[in-house]
Length: 344
Image (cartoon, rainbow, N blue to C red; front, side):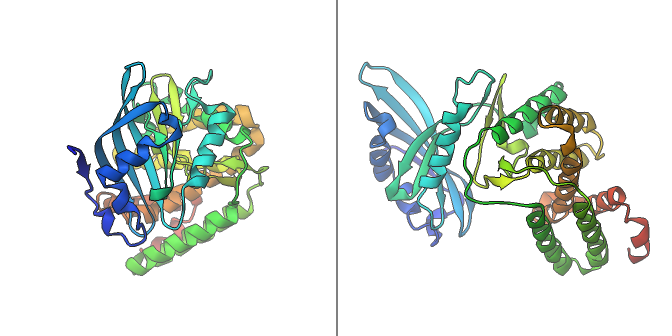
């Protein structure tokens, strides 16, 4: 078979993903994809396999380029995105995406807010599949002209998720956010002991901020909502990657997105407030939909997200030059910089 297989990560050597070798075998892949109910009346020809993401010991993403021929002779090129996770069969991920699709997030939704089409599961690969959507990540266009209008639409997308009433099997709270931040800061402190006193001061201020922030009524939340998870295709937005979907405070999604915009602004433009109009548009539209009482929680979660980026900056070589700038920003916004000036 003349099928291109591109596995730059060597995922077939990951013992935690034992079915990956089968999933990347062209003969097996074409046969299993052709058996999917979605293509029952069609013929599937596999053209290429690409591993696009891999977190060793945990998960990987595989894209299949296929040609689908129907009985009436019509042909269509389609890319399927397959997700494999260690010790998971894929059924839960497929059901969750299908629930959103059926809750008004289909490709023809009148409001222009969708999720990728769920395609099915392949038990032999412990994988579930969705159709790859066209467009670009909001991260890549939020700083462009029209970015504030896009931010308004993204707020509407977040609110639609929260109102969808799709059941969640896990729960995430402000206490969980603080626990994650403690763990992140502990790693940075081990690697860069000179920053430990400053990190401790920021963490203490974050805990006080969280304790003073009024709680919001829980709902189903994305929990990893930021620019890479929103694919912009003209007037239509596709929300992707619901792997962390759970019950939590809706303000977390919006605050998380704002915090990512702040970090992007600092790193790419050189100033944390360069995209403040985008942040404001996102916050105000969300509050208009969800109610103004959520404002303190949105801002608290945004602050915690910026603080978490201090750790995240250390995990990407190209972002390490921004670690101290992010830490200084946290100190400034939390009002702890002067108190710690002597420890620098």
